[in-house]
Length: 592
Image 1: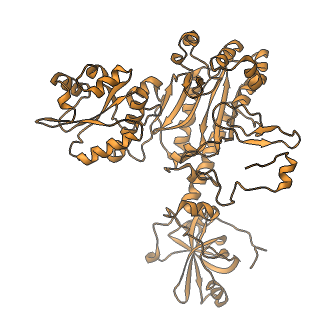
Image 2: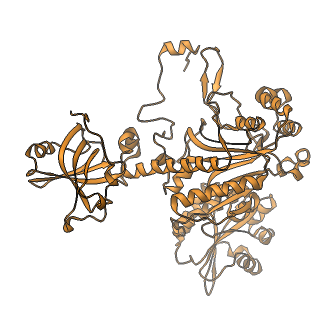
Protein backbone atom coordinates (compact mmCIF):
# COMPACT_ATOMS: atom_id res chain seq x y z
CA UNK A 1 0.00 0.00 0.00
CA UNK A 2 1.08 3.56 -0.70
CA UNK A 3 1.47 6.37 1.81
CA UNK A 4 0.48 10.04 2.01
CA UNK A 5 4.12 11.17 2.01
CA UNK A 6 4.44 14.48 0.19
CA UNK A 7 0.68 14.96 -0.06
CA UNK A 8 -1.56 17.14 2.09
CA UNK A 9 -5.33 17.13 1.71
CA UNK A 10 -6.52 20.52 0.48
CA UNK A 11 -10.32 20.11 0.61
CA UNK A 12 -13.10 17.89 1.88
CA UNK A 13 -14.94 16.20 -1.01
CA UNK A 14 -18.24 18.09 -0.85
CA UNK A 15 -16.66 21.47 -0.05
CA UNK A 16 -15.88 22.00 -3.74
CA UNK A 17 -18.22 23.87 -6.09
CA UNK A 18 -18.30 25.59 -9.49
CA UNK A 19 -16.27 28.41 -7.96
CA UNK A 20 -13.34 25.99 -7.68
CA UNK A 21 -13.23 25.04 -11.38
CA UNK A 22 -9.65 25.03 -12.62
CA UNK A 23 -8.21 24.60 -9.13
CA UNK A 24 -5.69 21.81 -8.40
CA UNK A 25 -6.86 19.83 -5.34
CA UNK A 26 -5.81 16.90 -3.19
CA UNK A 27 -8.72 14.79 -1.93
CA UNK A 28 -8.77 11.74 0.35
CA UNK A 29 -11.56 9.38 1.25
CA UNK A 30 -13.38 6.10 0.64
CA UNK A 31 -14.69 4.68 -2.63
CA UNK A 32 -18.49 4.80 -2.67
CA UNK A 33 -18.78 3.38 -6.17
CA UNK A 34 -16.82 2.77 -9.40
CA UNK A 35 -17.89 2.61 -13.07
CA UNK A 36 -15.54 1.52 -15.87
CA UNK A 37 -16.69 2.83 -19.27
CA UNK A 38 -13.71 1.61 -21.25
CA UNK A 39 -11.28 4.48 -21.59
CA UNK A 40 -12.85 6.31 -18.63
CA UNK A 41 -13.25 5.21 -15.02
CA UNK A 42 -15.59 7.18 -12.74
CA UNK A 43 -15.12 6.87 -8.98
CA UNK A 44 -17.41 8.38 -6.36
CA UNK A 45 -15.10 9.44 -3.54
CA UNK A 46 -16.71 9.88 -0.12
CA UNK A 47 -15.68 11.55 3.09
CA UNK A 48 -17.69 12.98 5.97
CA UNK A 49 -18.71 16.05 3.95
CA UNK A 50 -20.25 14.05 1.09
CA UNK A 51 -19.35 12.64 -2.34
CA UNK A 52 -17.57 13.93 -5.44
CA UNK A 53 -16.96 12.25 -8.79
CA UNK A 54 -13.36 11.54 -9.80
CA UNK A 55 -12.54 10.87 -13.48
CA UNK A 56 -9.60 8.69 -14.56
CA UNK A 57 -8.90 9.10 -18.29
CA UNK A 58 -6.72 6.52 -20.07
CA UNK A 59 -5.66 9.20 -22.58
CA UNK A 60 -4.30 11.41 -19.78
CA UNK A 61 -2.25 8.68 -18.07
CA UNK A 62 -2.30 4.98 -18.92
CA UNK A 63 -0.42 4.17 -15.68
CA UNK A 64 -2.92 5.95 -13.44
CA UNK A 65 -5.80 4.40 -15.40
CA UNK A 66 -4.32 0.93 -14.91
CA UNK A 67 -4.05 1.53 -11.16
CA UNK A 68 -7.66 2.86 -11.09
CA UNK A 69 -8.82 -0.46 -12.55
CA UNK A 70 -7.78 -2.07 -9.23
CA UNK A 71 -10.10 0.17 -7.19
CA UNK A 72 -13.01 -1.45 -5.35
CA UNK A 73 -15.68 -0.14 -2.96
CA UNK A 74 -14.39 1.14 0.40
CA UNK A 75 -10.76 1.36 -0.76
CA UNK A 76 -9.11 4.43 0.76
CA UNK A 77 -7.63 6.76 -1.87
CA UNK A 78 -5.59 9.92 -2.16
CA UNK A 79 -6.30 11.72 -5.44
CA UNK A 80 -4.61 14.74 -6.99
CA UNK A 81 -6.56 16.41 -9.77
CA UNK A 82 -8.17 19.48 -11.25
CA UNK A 83 -11.76 20.58 -10.65
CA UNK A 84 -13.78 20.74 -13.88
CA UNK A 85 -17.39 21.49 -14.84
CA UNK A 86 -19.44 18.50 -15.88
CA UNK A 87 -20.91 18.37 -19.37
CA UNK A 88 -24.55 19.59 -19.29
CA UNK A 89 -25.89 16.09 -19.94
CA UNK A 90 -23.80 14.70 -17.03
CA UNK A 91 -25.03 17.13 -14.36
CA UNK A 92 -26.54 15.36 -11.32
CA UNK A 93 -28.81 17.72 -9.36
CA UNK A 94 -29.28 15.13 -6.61
CA UNK A 95 -25.65 15.54 -5.54
CA UNK A 96 -24.28 18.62 -3.79
CA UNK A 97 -21.26 18.39 -6.12
CA UNK A 98 -23.33 17.27 -9.12
CA UNK A 99 -22.17 20.14 -11.35
CA UNK A 100 -18.45 19.37 -11.06
CA UNK A 101 -15.94 16.52 -11.12
CA UNK A 102 -12.22 16.13 -10.49
CA UNK A 103 -10.00 15.01 -13.37
CA UNK A 104 -7.30 12.90 -11.71
CA UNK A 105 -3.60 13.42 -12.41
CA UNK A 106 -2.29 11.27 -9.54
CA UNK A 107 -3.71 8.33 -7.59
CA UNK A 108 -2.52 6.58 -4.44
CA UNK A 109 -4.29 3.56 -2.98
CA UNK A 110 -3.74 4.06 0.72
CA UNK A 111 -5.71 1.05 1.92
CA UNK A 112 -7.60 -1.88 0.41
CA UNK A 113 -10.92 -3.16 1.77
CA UNK A 114 -12.78 -6.43 1.83
CA UNK A 115 -16.42 -6.45 0.77
CA UNK A 116 -18.39 -4.95 3.71
CA UNK A 117 -21.17 -7.05 5.33
CA UNK A 118 -23.71 -4.39 4.26
CA UNK A 119 -23.90 -1.46 1.84
CA UNK A 120 -22.52 1.90 3.00
CA UNK A 121 -25.64 3.81 1.95
CA UNK A 122 -28.20 6.15 3.47
CA UNK A 123 -31.40 4.72 4.99
CA UNK A 124 -30.00 1.21 5.02
CA UNK A 125 -32.52 -1.57 5.65
CA UNK A 126 -30.24 -3.98 7.50
CA UNK A 127 -30.39 -5.97 10.71
CA UNK A 128 -29.52 -3.64 13.60
CA UNK A 129 -27.43 -6.28 15.40
CA UNK A 130 -25.28 -6.67 12.28
CA UNK A 131 -24.94 -2.88 12.04
CA UNK A 132 -23.87 -2.67 15.68
CA UNK A 133 -21.36 -5.50 15.32
CA UNK A 134 -19.69 -3.52 12.52
CA UNK A 135 -20.50 -0.12 13.98
CA UNK A 136 -17.38 1.52 12.49
CA UNK A 137 -18.80 0.67 9.05
CA UNK A 138 -22.34 1.70 10.02
CA UNK A 139 -20.97 5.08 11.11
CA UNK A 140 -19.57 5.65 7.61
CA UNK A 141 -23.12 5.87 6.27
CA UNK A 142 -24.18 9.47 5.49
CA UNK A 143 -27.31 9.48 7.68
CA UNK A 144 -25.38 8.16 10.68
CA UNK A 145 -22.66 10.76 10.16
CA UNK A 146 -25.34 13.47 10.00
CA UNK A 147 -26.71 12.24 13.34
CA UNK A 148 -23.29 12.40 15.02
CA UNK A 149 -22.59 15.84 13.52
CA UNK A 150 -26.00 17.03 14.75
CA UNK A 151 -25.14 15.78 18.24
CA UNK A 152 -21.87 17.72 18.13
CA UNK A 153 -23.73 20.83 16.95
CA UNK A 154 -26.28 20.64 19.78
CA UNK A 155 -23.54 20.16 22.40
CA UNK A 156 -21.66 23.16 20.99
CA UNK A 157 -24.78 25.36 21.11
CA UNK A 158 -25.43 24.29 24.71
CA UNK A 159 -21.86 25.11 25.79
CA UNK A 160 -21.88 28.49 24.08
CA UNK A 161 -25.32 29.40 25.45
CA UNK A 162 -24.47 28.64 29.06
CA UNK A 163 -21.09 30.35 28.79
CA UNK A 164 -22.82 33.49 27.52
CA UNK A 165 -25.26 33.31 30.46
CA UNK A 166 -22.70 33.15 33.25
CA UNK A 167 -22.52 29.39 33.84
CA UNK A 168 -19.29 27.56 34.66
CA UNK A 169 -18.63 24.13 33.16
CA UNK A 170 -17.37 22.02 36.07
CA UNK A 171 -16.55 18.31 36.02
CA UNK A 172 -17.74 16.04 38.84
CA UNK A 173 -16.30 12.63 39.82
CA UNK A 174 -17.02 9.42 37.93
CA UNK A 175 -15.98 7.29 40.92
CA UNK A 176 -18.31 8.19 43.76
CA UNK A 177 -20.22 6.85 46.76
CA UNK A 178 -23.12 4.45 46.30
CA UNK A 179 -26.36 6.00 47.58
CA UNK A 180 -29.00 3.44 46.55
CA UNK A 181 -32.30 5.24 45.99
CA UNK A 182 -33.82 4.65 42.57
CA UNK A 183 -32.13 2.63 39.82
CA UNK A 184 -29.32 0.16 40.58
CA UNK A 185 -25.79 1.51 40.73
CA UNK A 186 -22.92 0.23 38.64
CA UNK A 187 -20.27 -0.70 41.21
CA UNK A 188 -16.50 -0.47 40.79
CA UNK A 189 -14.33 -2.47 43.22
CA UNK A 190 -11.43 -0.65 44.90
CA UNK A 191 -8.04 -2.39 44.81
CA UNK A 192 -6.54 -0.19 47.54
CA UNK A 193 -9.62 -0.45 49.80
CA UNK A 194 -10.37 -4.20 49.85
CA UNK A 195 -14.07 -5.02 50.07
CA UNK A 196 -15.14 -1.47 49.28
CA UNK A 197 -16.72 -0.15 46.09
CA UNK A 198 -17.16 3.06 44.21
CA UNK A 199 -20.38 3.67 42.28
CA UNK A 200 -20.59 5.20 38.83
CA UNK A 201 -22.89 8.25 39.09
CA UNK A 202 -26.56 7.91 38.16
CA UNK A 203 -26.40 11.70 37.93
CA UNK A 204 -24.21 14.43 39.46
CA UNK A 205 -27.14 15.48 41.71
CA UNK A 206 -25.35 15.72 45.06
CA UNK A 207 -22.20 17.23 43.60
CA UNK A 208 -24.04 19.96 41.76
CA UNK A 209 -25.88 20.88 44.95
CA UNK A 210 -22.53 21.02 46.73
CA UNK A 211 -21.22 23.30 44.00
CA UNK A 212 -24.04 25.70 44.85
CA UNK A 213 -22.99 25.52 48.52
CA UNK A 214 -19.47 26.26 47.27
CA UNK A 215 -20.65 29.56 45.82
CA UNK A 216 -20.24 28.66 42.12
CA UNK A 217 -23.67 30.23 41.52
CA UNK A 218 -24.30 28.79 38.04
CA UNK A 219 -23.00 25.38 36.92
CA UNK A 220 -23.48 23.18 33.87
CA UNK A 221 -21.91 20.01 32.55
CA UNK A 222 -22.44 17.67 29.62
CA UNK A 223 -21.90 14.52 31.63
CA UNK A 224 -21.99 10.74 31.39
CA UNK A 225 -24.41 8.97 33.75
CA UNK A 226 -24.88 5.27 34.51
CA UNK A 227 -27.91 3.24 35.57
CA UNK A 228 -28.14 -0.52 35.76
CA UNK A 229 -31.74 -0.89 34.62
CA UNK A 230 -33.76 -2.79 32.04
CA UNK A 231 -33.45 -1.11 28.67
CA UNK A 232 -35.87 0.20 26.03
CA UNK A 233 -35.37 1.96 22.72
CA UNK A 234 -34.81 5.27 24.51
CA UNK A 235 -32.60 3.97 27.34
CA UNK A 236 -28.96 3.01 27.65
CA UNK A 237 -26.90 1.83 30.65
CA UNK A 238 -24.63 4.82 30.03
CA UNK A 239 -26.17 8.01 28.74
CA UNK A 240 -25.42 11.73 28.51
CA UNK A 241 -27.07 14.55 30.44
CA UNK A 242 -27.00 18.29 30.00
CA UNK A 243 -26.81 19.07 33.71
CA UNK A 244 -27.65 22.51 35.15
CA UNK A 245 -27.84 24.11 38.62
CA UNK A 246 -28.44 27.72 39.68
CA UNK A 247 -28.37 29.58 43.00
CA UNK A 248 -30.91 32.11 44.31
CA UNK A 249 -33.62 31.12 41.83
CA UNK A 250 -37.27 30.11 41.83
CA UNK A 251 -39.16 27.85 39.42
CA UNK A 252 -39.82 30.69 36.96
CA UNK A 253 -36.12 31.57 36.73
CA UNK A 254 -35.18 27.99 35.81
CA UNK A 255 -37.98 27.64 33.27
CA UNK A 256 -37.22 30.97 31.61
CA UNK A 257 -33.54 30.32 30.92
CA UNK A 258 -34.24 26.81 29.68
CA UNK A 259 -36.91 28.06 27.30
CA UNK A 260 -34.29 30.40 25.85
CA UNK A 261 -31.89 27.45 25.51
CA UNK A 262 -34.50 25.40 23.63
CA UNK A 263 -35.36 28.38 21.42
CA UNK A 264 -31.69 28.78 20.47
CA UNK A 265 -31.24 25.06 19.71
CA UNK A 266 -34.35 24.91 17.52
CA UNK A 267 -33.46 28.14 15.69
CA UNK A 268 -29.83 27.20 15.05
CA UNK A 269 -30.39 23.51 14.26
CA UNK A 270 -33.78 23.38 12.53
CA UNK A 271 -34.44 27.03 11.67
CA UNK A 272 -37.64 26.91 13.73
CA UNK A 273 -38.82 29.87 15.85
CA UNK A 274 -40.42 28.57 19.06
CA UNK A 275 -43.28 30.46 20.65
CA UNK A 276 -42.47 31.43 24.24
CA UNK A 277 -43.40 31.03 26.99
CA UNK A 278 -44.15 27.33 26.53
CA UNK A 279 -47.48 25.91 27.65
CA UNK A 280 -47.44 24.96 31.36
CA UNK A 281 -49.66 22.16 32.61
CA UNK A 282 -49.92 21.08 36.24
CA UNK A 283 -49.36 17.32 36.60
CA UNK A 284 -53.00 16.72 37.60
CA UNK A 285 -54.31 18.58 34.53
CA UNK A 286 -51.93 16.72 32.20
CA UNK A 287 -53.37 13.41 33.46
CA UNK A 288 -56.99 14.63 33.33
CA UNK A 289 -56.70 15.90 29.76
CA UNK A 290 -54.16 13.57 28.17
CA UNK A 291 -53.77 10.55 30.48
CA UNK A 292 -50.03 11.15 30.66
CA UNK A 293 -47.46 13.22 32.53
CA UNK A 294 -45.60 13.60 29.23
CA UNK A 295 -48.44 14.49 26.85
CA UNK A 296 -48.13 14.83 23.11
CA UNK A 297 -50.10 18.00 22.36
CA UNK A 298 -49.69 17.99 18.58
CA UNK A 299 -53.26 16.65 18.26
CA UNK A 300 -56.53 16.64 20.25
CA UNK A 301 -58.27 13.45 21.39
CA UNK A 302 -58.42 14.75 24.96
CA UNK A 303 -59.92 12.66 27.77
CA UNK A 304 -63.32 13.50 29.25
CA UNK A 305 -64.39 12.38 32.73
CA UNK A 306 -67.90 10.88 32.64
CA UNK A 307 -67.75 9.24 36.09
CA UNK A 308 -70.50 11.45 37.56
CA UNK A 309 -72.85 10.59 34.67
CA UNK A 310 -72.54 6.79 35.00
CA UNK A 311 -71.96 6.45 38.76
CA UNK A 312 -75.53 5.25 39.33
CA UNK A 313 -76.10 3.64 35.93
CA UNK A 314 -77.32 0.14 35.29
CA UNK A 315 -74.00 -0.78 33.67
CA UNK A 316 -72.21 -2.53 36.52
CA UNK A 317 -68.70 -2.15 35.05
CA UNK A 318 -69.05 1.65 35.04
CA UNK A 319 -70.88 1.97 38.35
CA UNK A 320 -68.52 -0.39 40.21
CA UNK A 321 -65.40 1.41 38.96
CA UNK A 322 -66.72 4.69 40.37
CA UNK A 323 -67.89 3.06 43.61
CA UNK A 324 -64.40 1.64 44.20
CA UNK A 325 -62.84 5.10 43.90
CA UNK A 326 -61.86 4.77 40.26
CA UNK A 327 -63.24 6.61 37.25
CA UNK A 328 -64.83 6.28 33.83
CA UNK A 329 -63.29 8.38 31.08
CA UNK A 330 -63.75 8.73 27.35
CA UNK A 331 -62.07 9.86 24.13
CA UNK A 332 -64.03 11.13 21.13
CA UNK A 333 -62.47 9.94 17.86
CA UNK A 334 -64.03 12.64 15.68
CA UNK A 335 -65.50 11.56 12.33
CA UNK A 336 -64.03 8.06 12.58
CA UNK A 337 -67.23 5.99 12.42
CA UNK A 338 -66.43 4.98 8.85
CA UNK A 339 -62.70 4.50 9.53
CA UNK A 340 -62.90 1.77 12.18
CA UNK A 341 -64.58 -1.55 11.53
CA UNK A 342 -65.84 -3.80 14.33
CA UNK A 343 -62.61 -5.76 13.95
CA UNK A 344 -60.61 -2.54 14.36
CA UNK A 345 -62.51 -1.71 17.55
CA UNK A 346 -61.86 -5.23 18.87
CA UNK A 347 -58.14 -4.80 18.13
CA UNK A 348 -58.14 -1.50 20.04
CA UNK A 349 -59.83 -3.36 22.91
CA UNK A 350 -56.95 -5.85 22.92
CA UNK A 351 -54.47 -2.98 22.68
CA UNK A 352 -55.69 -1.27 25.87
CA UNK A 353 -55.50 -4.59 27.72
CA UNK A 354 -51.72 -4.39 27.42
CA UNK A 355 -52.02 -1.37 29.73
CA UNK A 356 -54.09 -3.38 32.27
CA UNK A 357 -57.51 -2.14 31.13
CA UNK A 358 -60.15 -4.89 31.27
CA UNK A 359 -61.69 -3.80 27.98
CA UNK A 360 -62.89 -0.93 25.80
CA UNK A 361 -66.50 0.23 25.57
CA UNK A 362 -67.53 2.25 22.54
CA UNK A 363 -70.42 4.33 21.23
CA UNK A 364 -70.84 5.03 17.50
CA UNK A 365 -72.97 8.07 16.68
CA UNK A 366 -74.73 8.18 13.29
CA UNK A 367 -77.37 10.51 11.82
CA UNK A 368 -80.17 8.09 12.69
CA UNK A 369 -79.05 6.01 15.67
CA UNK A 370 -76.55 5.24 18.40
CA UNK A 371 -74.73 1.90 18.19
CA UNK A 372 -73.07 0.54 21.30
CA UNK A 373 -72.81 -2.74 23.22
CA UNK A 374 -73.47 -0.74 26.44
CA UNK A 375 -76.51 1.14 25.08
CA UNK A 376 -79.06 -1.21 26.70
CA UNK A 377 -77.54 -0.62 30.15
CA UNK A 378 -77.74 3.17 30.00
CA UNK A 379 -80.81 5.39 30.13
CA UNK A 380 -81.52 7.79 27.27
CA UNK A 381 -80.70 10.68 29.61
CA UNK A 382 -77.33 9.13 30.59
CA UNK A 383 -76.46 8.46 26.95
CA UNK A 384 -77.37 11.98 25.85
CA UNK A 385 -75.36 13.48 28.73
CA UNK A 386 -72.32 11.38 27.72
CA UNK A 387 -72.68 12.59 24.12
CA UNK A 388 -72.94 16.19 25.33
CA UNK A 389 -69.90 15.88 27.64
CA UNK A 390 -67.78 14.43 24.82
CA UNK A 391 -69.12 16.89 22.19
CA UNK A 392 -70.27 13.96 20.06
CA UNK A 393 -71.60 14.55 16.54
CA UNK A 394 -72.81 12.12 13.86
CA UNK A 395 -69.78 10.22 12.54
CA UNK A 396 -67.93 10.17 15.89
CA UNK A 397 -66.86 7.18 17.98
CA UNK A 398 -66.69 7.54 21.77
CA UNK A 399 -64.19 5.13 23.39
CA UNK A 400 -64.56 4.51 27.12
CA UNK A 401 -62.50 2.82 29.84
CA UNK A 402 -63.56 2.25 33.46
CA UNK A 403 -61.09 1.20 36.18
CA UNK A 404 -58.71 2.57 38.81
CA UNK A 405 -57.52 6.06 37.88
CA UNK A 406 -53.93 4.97 37.17
CA UNK A 407 -55.14 2.24 34.78
CA UNK A 408 -57.65 4.54 33.07
CA UNK A 409 -55.03 7.25 32.53
CA UNK A 410 -52.37 4.81 31.33
CA UNK A 411 -54.61 2.93 28.90
CA UNK A 412 -56.45 5.97 27.50
CA UNK A 413 -53.19 7.93 27.33
CA UNK A 414 -51.69 5.22 25.14
CA UNK A 415 -54.94 4.77 23.20
CA UNK A 416 -54.91 8.43 22.09
CA UNK A 417 -51.33 7.96 20.84
CA UNK A 418 -52.35 4.81 18.95
CA UNK A 419 -55.37 6.57 17.43
CA UNK A 420 -53.19 9.50 16.33
CA UNK A 421 -50.82 7.04 14.67
CA UNK A 422 -53.59 5.10 12.88
CA UNK A 423 -55.37 8.28 11.82
CA UNK A 424 -52.19 10.03 10.64
CA UNK A 425 -52.82 13.05 12.87
CA UNK A 426 -49.17 13.92 13.47
CA UNK A 427 -47.04 16.01 11.11
CA UNK A 428 -43.41 14.92 11.14
CA UNK A 429 -42.03 18.47 11.18
CA UNK A 430 -44.35 19.67 13.97
CA UNK A 431 -42.64 20.34 17.30
CA UNK A 432 -44.59 21.12 20.47
CA UNK A 433 -42.87 21.77 23.80
CA UNK A 434 -44.50 22.19 27.18
CA UNK A 435 -43.72 22.12 30.89
CA UNK A 436 -45.46 19.72 33.24
CA UNK A 437 -45.35 21.22 36.75
CA UNK A 438 -46.50 20.56 40.33
CA UNK A 439 -45.66 16.87 40.37
CA UNK A 440 -46.51 14.87 43.49
CA UNK A 441 -43.56 14.94 45.87
CA UNK A 442 -44.05 11.30 46.91
CA UNK A 443 -45.42 7.96 45.77
CA UNK A 444 -46.26 4.94 47.90
CA UNK A 445 -44.29 1.77 47.15
CA UNK A 446 -46.51 -1.24 47.89
CA UNK A 447 -43.56 -3.62 47.80
CA UNK A 448 -41.41 -1.70 50.28
CA UNK A 449 -44.43 -0.42 52.24
CA UNK A 450 -43.07 3.10 52.39
CA UNK A 451 -43.15 6.44 50.63
CA UNK A 452 -40.57 7.02 47.88
CA UNK A 453 -39.57 10.26 46.18
CA UNK A 454 -41.28 10.85 42.83
CA UNK A 455 -38.10 12.59 41.59
CA UNK A 456 -35.38 12.39 44.28
CA UNK A 457 -35.10 13.01 48.05
CA UNK A 458 -33.75 16.57 47.63
CA UNK A 459 -36.80 17.96 45.79
CA UNK A 460 -38.49 20.80 47.65
CA UNK A 461 -42.19 20.58 48.48
CA UNK A 462 -44.36 23.56 47.60
CA UNK A 463 -44.34 25.92 50.59
CA UNK A 464 -48.10 25.77 51.17
CA UNK A 465 -48.05 21.93 51.16
CA UNK A 466 -45.31 21.42 53.79
CA UNK A 467 -47.86 20.90 56.64
CA UNK A 468 -49.32 17.97 54.66
CA UNK A 469 -46.08 15.99 55.11
CA UNK A 470 -47.48 14.98 58.52
CA UNK A 471 -51.17 14.62 57.70
CA UNK A 472 -51.44 13.54 54.04
CA UNK A 473 -48.02 13.05 52.36
CA UNK A 474 -49.42 11.91 48.99
CA UNK A 475 -51.15 15.29 48.52
CA UNK A 476 -47.88 17.22 48.80
CA UNK A 477 -46.90 18.84 45.51
CA UNK A 478 -43.27 19.39 44.55
CA UNK A 479 -41.48 22.38 43.07
CA UNK A 480 -40.66 20.01 40.21
CA UNK A 481 -41.01 20.34 36.46
CA UNK A 482 -40.46 18.25 33.34
CA UNK A 483 -39.99 19.56 29.82
CA UNK A 484 -41.81 17.48 27.21
CA UNK A 485 -41.25 17.47 23.45
CA UNK A 486 -43.80 15.68 21.26
CA UNK A 487 -44.77 13.26 24.01
CA UNK A 488 -41.21 12.52 25.13
CA UNK A 489 -39.82 13.77 28.43
CA UNK A 490 -36.48 15.31 27.43
CA UNK A 491 -35.60 16.82 30.78
CA UNK A 492 -36.69 17.54 34.30
CA UNK A 493 -35.67 19.12 37.55
CA UNK A 494 -36.74 20.90 40.67
CA UNK A 495 -36.03 23.55 43.25
CA UNK A 496 -34.01 21.78 45.96
CA UNK A 497 -34.46 21.63 49.71
CA UNK A 498 -31.89 23.94 51.28
CA UNK A 499 -33.14 23.84 54.86
CA UNK A 500 -31.52 21.21 57.14
CA UNK A 501 -34.66 20.59 59.19
CA UNK A 502 -36.86 20.19 56.10
CA UNK A 503 -34.32 17.83 54.51
CA UNK A 504 -34.28 15.74 57.70
CA UNK A 505 -38.11 15.73 57.66
CA UNK A 506 -38.04 14.50 54.07
CA UNK A 507 -35.70 11.64 54.99
CA UNK A 508 -38.03 10.68 57.87
CA UNK A 509 -41.04 10.68 55.52
CA UNK A 510 -39.10 8.38 53.17
CA UNK A 511 -38.58 5.96 56.04
CA UNK A 512 -34.89 6.66 56.72
CA UNK A 513 -33.80 6.75 60.34
CA UNK A 514 -31.52 9.64 61.30
CA UNK A 515 -28.60 7.19 61.31
CA UNK A 516 -29.45 5.82 57.82
CA UNK A 517 -29.84 9.33 56.42
CA UNK A 518 -26.43 10.37 57.82
CA UNK A 519 -24.80 7.17 56.60
CA UNK A 520 -26.02 7.76 53.04
CA UNK A 521 -26.06 11.54 52.78
CA UNK A 522 -24.07 12.73 55.81
CA UNK A 523 -21.63 14.76 53.69
CA UNK A 524 -24.55 16.75 52.26
CA UNK A 525 -26.21 17.22 55.65
CA UNK A 526 -22.88 18.34 57.08
CA UNK A 527 -22.45 20.85 54.24
CA UNK A 528 -25.92 22.27 54.92
CA UNK A 529 -24.62 23.51 58.29
CA UNK A 530 -22.39 26.11 56.66
CA UNK A 531 -24.80 28.36 54.80
CA UNK A 532 -26.88 26.97 51.94
CA UNK A 533 -28.26 29.20 49.17
CA UNK A 534 -31.72 28.49 47.74
CA UNK A 535 -30.96 26.60 44.53
CA UNK A 536 -32.50 24.55 41.76
CA UNK A 537 -31.82 23.13 38.37
CA UNK A 538 -32.56 20.40 35.91
CA UNK A 539 -31.05 17.90 33.51
CA UNK A 540 -31.80 16.98 29.90
CA UNK A 541 -31.28 13.65 28.24
CA UNK A 542 -28.98 14.76 25.42
CA UNK A 543 -29.46 11.46 23.59
CA UNK A 544 -33.25 11.79 23.57
CA UNK A 545 -33.15 15.44 22.53
CA UNK A 546 -30.84 14.74 19.59
CA UNK A 547 -32.93 11.69 18.62
CA UNK A 548 -36.04 13.89 18.29
CA UNK A 549 -34.20 16.67 16.44
CA UNK A 550 -32.82 14.07 14.02
CA UNK A 551 -36.27 12.51 13.49
CA UNK A 552 -35.12 9.08 14.68
CA UNK A 553 -37.01 6.50 16.73
CA UNK A 554 -34.13 5.14 18.83
CA UNK A 555 -31.36 6.84 20.79
CA UNK A 556 -29.01 4.14 19.49
CA UNK A 557 -29.07 6.04 16.18
CA UNK A 558 -27.50 9.12 17.76
CA UNK A 559 -24.90 7.43 19.99
CA UNK A 560 -21.60 6.48 18.37
CA UNK A 561 -21.15 3.12 20.13
CA UNK A 562 -24.41 2.13 21.87
CA UNK A 563 -25.38 -1.04 23.70
CA UNK A 564 -28.30 -3.34 22.94
CA UNK A 565 -31.18 -4.24 25.26
CA UNK A 566 -29.07 -6.82 27.08
CA UNK A 567 -26.61 -4.00 27.96
CA UNK A 568 -24.01 -5.68 25.72
CA UNK A 569 -21.84 -3.90 23.18
CA UNK A 570 -21.73 -6.20 20.14
CA UNK A 571 -18.65 -4.71 18.48
CA UNK A 572 -16.20 -5.33 21.36
CA UNK A 573 -18.25 -8.08 23.07
CA UNK A 574 -18.41 -6.13 26.33
CA UNK A 575 -18.99 -7.08 29.09
CA UNK A 576 -16.39 -9.82 29.10
CA UNK A 577 -14.71 -12.13 31.55
CA UNK A 578 -11.46 -11.00 33.16
CA UNK A 579 -8.53 -13.12 34.22
CA UNK A 580 -8.05 -14.52 37.70
CA UNK A 581 -5.09 -12.21 38.45
CA UNK A 582 -7.25 -9.10 38.04
CA UNK A 583 -9.93 -10.53 40.33
CA UNK A 584 -7.37 -11.48 42.96
CA UNK A 585 -5.94 -7.93 42.98
CA UNK A 586 -9.46 -6.63 43.59
CA UNK A 587 -10.11 -9.17 46.35
CA UNK A 588 -13.03 -10.60 44.39
CA UNK A 589 -13.94 -14.29 44.21
CA UNK A 590 -16.60 -15.42 41.74
CA UNK A 591 -19.18 -17.97 42.85
CA UNK A 592 -21.67 -18.10 40.00
